Image (cartoon, rainbow, N blue to C red; front, side, top):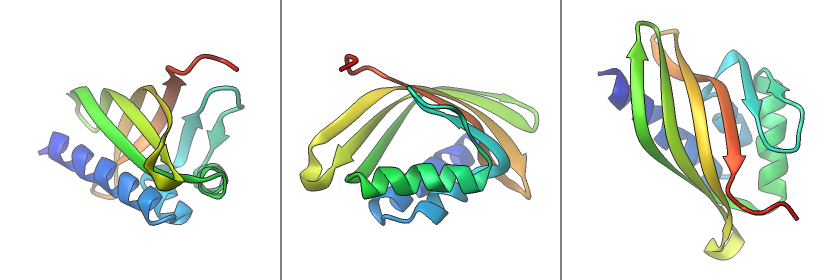
Length: 124
């Protein structure tokens, strides 16, 4: 089922962060994906997304928790609404917020195609 495949890719993304593997994290995205993080221009394509994750890992991010609130399947695409938490070295909460992902089937697997996150933390 597609919802289970999406959950599996989310788990793979979380494991990649825990394993400090930016390339494995970027591999969860389509080749022409866009990742839209707060206070930054969009990261377009796997290479740029890998650089984002490497920067986050170099900055001390050690964990990612994703909670899916809803998923709607639309043929070879789907959208997901959820919550995220990022953890720093030692397990402290570094950030939390919400996300919307547009998923796309590519090569027989579900991959993140458009990913936008919005922090719940106050601007500093």
